[in-house]
Amino acid sequence: MRFAIAGGGVAGLAAGLAVARAGHSAVVVERDHVTAHGGPEDAFDVVRKGIPHFQQPHTFLPRGRKVLRELAPDVIATLLDAGAEEQDLAAKLSGPRQPGDEDLVYLWVRRPVVEWALRRAAEAEPGVRLVSGRQIACLVPGASGFHLDNGEEICADVVVDALGRYRCPPGWPRASAQPSECGAIYYCRYFALVPGAEHVTGPWLLNPRGDLGYMGFNTFRGDNRTFAVIMLVPTTDHDLRILRDNRAWMAAARTITPLDVMTSPDHAVPITDVMPMGGLANIDRTTGPGVPGLVPVGDALCHTDPAFAYGLSFALVHAQALGRASAAHTSPADLTAAYLADVGPEARERHTFALETDAARTLAWSGAPVDIGHRDGCYPLFAFGAALAAAPHDDHVLRRTVGRVGLLDRVPVFDTDSDLHDRIERIWAGLTRTPCGPPREELLRTVNAELVSS
Image (cartoon, rainbow, N blue to C red; front, side, top):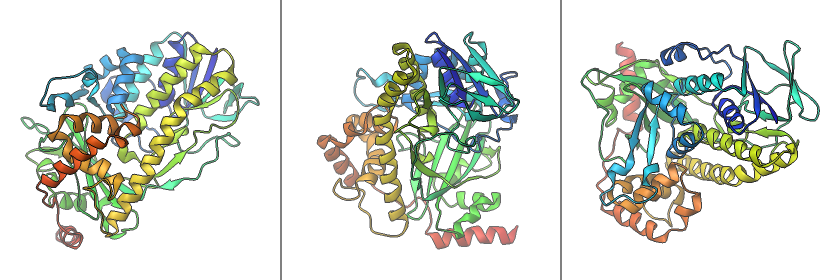
C-alpha cells in the first residue's frame, strides 16, 4: 500500500518508518524546511514553526523506549551515540530482578535530537520519501491522498494525520472533541552540568520533583549532560506569571530544594532562556474522523497534559500499531478500523487519567484540603504523588508505579491492586515530609525584590 503522511515530526517520521518496514511505501510531508544533514548538535538550529514545543522537554518513557527498540533499534543506537542516556530504575530494586524489569528504563534525550535521528533513519529507508518545506493544501476526496501548496498531488491508499494538535489545512476532517484545559502554565529552562558535576540524586524514584501547595516543579534529564527544570503554575495565578522572566525564575529556583543546588553556578549553567508553554488542553479524538483510509497518530489522535510526558511514547506506540495494521489488512477501511480498535482504548484511559489528575491538582492548588495519603481521599493524587514517594521503599510499589507512569501497564493494573494501595498508605504514613519551598507570598516577595535590585 501507499501511505501519504501529513506531518514530519516524531509521529509522522515514526509512522513512515513503521509502514515502510512492514513492506509498504510512504511519502512524509513536512511544512518546515528540515533535513537529516549535519550532526545532532545542528538539530537545535532548525526552525520548527509547526511545532511550538519543539525545544521544550520531552521524555522517552519506558514504554516508548521499549517500542523504539522493537520498531527501530538502529534509531536507539543513533541516539545513544549522539549522547542520549539510559536510566535503569530496576537498579533501585532491593530484591532480585524479575521478568519485565528490563523494561524499567528511561531514555533521556532532547526532542530535537530525537527528531534528527528518526529523520536520518527515514531518509535512509528505501520505502520512504521525505518532502520538506511544503504545506498541504487540502485532502483529496475519499482520502486518496492530498494536494500540496505547489500543486503536486500525493496519491495514496491511506492518509496518515500526523499534524499534531495545532492548525490543520482547511476542511481537514477530524473527530469532534471538547478540549479540557490542563490548568497550568509551564516555565522551563535547560541547563548543562559544569565539568565535574553530576546529576542530583536523592529520595526520588526518578528525578527531583515537588509540590509547594500552590505550584509545582519537575525536572527532566537530557542528552550530553543536560537537564531541564519546569515550574508549573496555575493558569489562574497571574502574579506567578512573573516567572517568565529569567531573573525571576532564577530567584524562585534559589528558594526551592533541590533546585537551589541544581541551578547554582557551580553545578550547572543555563543554556536557554525561560521558555513558557501555555494554552494546554487534553483532547480525545480516538473515535477517528469517520473517513476510511484517514488515520490519526500521535497528538492528532489524543493529546494530554505534557506533565505526563506521553507524547513521544504514544507517537511510537501508534506508529507501531499502524505497522501491524498495514501488515494484516489490505483494505484501507479495514486497516483504519483495526488501527483505531488497537490504540483507542488505551489512549482513552490515559485521557481520563489526565483529566482526573489535572482536576485534582487544580483543586489542591486552590487551597482546598486534599488527602493524597489514602486511596479513599484524593485518589488521582494518591495514585500519582503518594505512589511516586513510596516507590523507592518497596519493590512492588516501584514496579507498579513505573508501570503506571511509564505506560508499561494499563491503568487498571494499578487501580485494582488493593495490596499495592495498602503498601503505599503504610509507607506514606511513615515518611518524613518537609516543605520544599516557601509559602507563595514569600516566594513572590523574593522574586520581586530580585527584579527591583537588578
